[in-house]
Image (cartoon, rainbow, N blue to C red; front, side, top):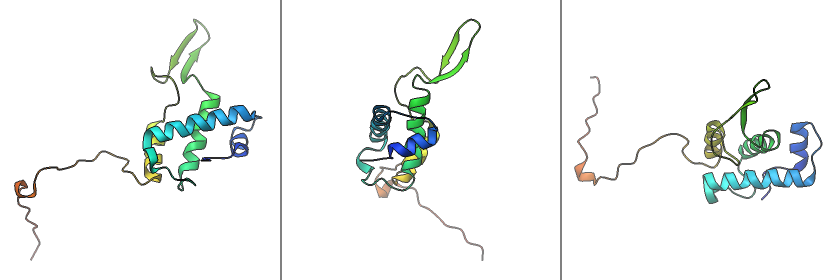
Amino acid sequence: MALFEASELRTLLKRPLTDAECTLAHDLTEDAFYGEVGERLTDPPQRGVKSVALAVASRVLTNPGGVRSEQAGGMLVSYADSETGVMLSDDERRRLRRAVGMASGASSLNIAPEDTAPPVTVWRAL
């Protein structure tokens, strides 16, 4: 499945990339997407998926270590989180889930039998 074309990634980053770099960024992005939404990702991808994929792939190539900040004096480096690899930001996760038709926020599921539910009264002004 093609989430994006190599030429689109090169245009977005405005620098030359090898085919191997484009392929790696694509494969890592696709793997992260399948980990998040599974088989809900279609071929061709749903509208909205490409923009998230390009954002993730460009970050993979520009900041592969997930560095959040650096300081030259004293060599201080802080990372986005303790995990390594391709991570989706909360915004990317929400946008991806919305694009494939999944709920993007918190929700609740009531599994109690119907006869145990409290009665609901709808009040209307007369």
